[in-house]
Image 1 (tube, rainbow, N blue to C red):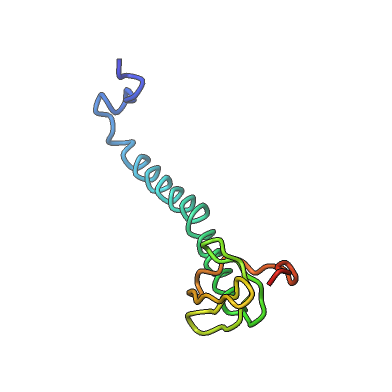
Image 2 (cartoon, one colour):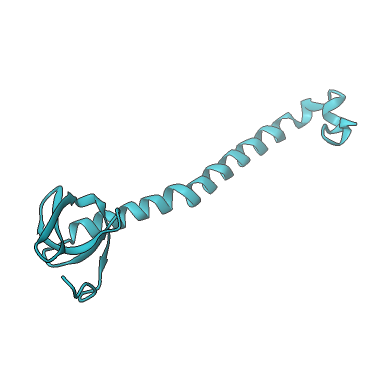
Length: 112
């Protein structure tokens, strides 16, 4: 019943000659998994992190932004770790700079 899962040569003990080929196959498969992991997870994540770091460094007073909580507003003060965000006329909130997820085009928030 399990003959289709276990090759006949391995089941009969003839693995001595095929042992080297099996090890090379396992190494190739391991390298393949590492490459897949790199291209599907590590590389895209590092590109996103680099783009977010660039966005943080380019923030300036007057930019219109969206933060991760969904608030949108105009920057009134930009510090090293915190920003002041004007969300309505005369209403400002202080948030962490890293919570900014996007910079909006100028003129998007006309009501402020």
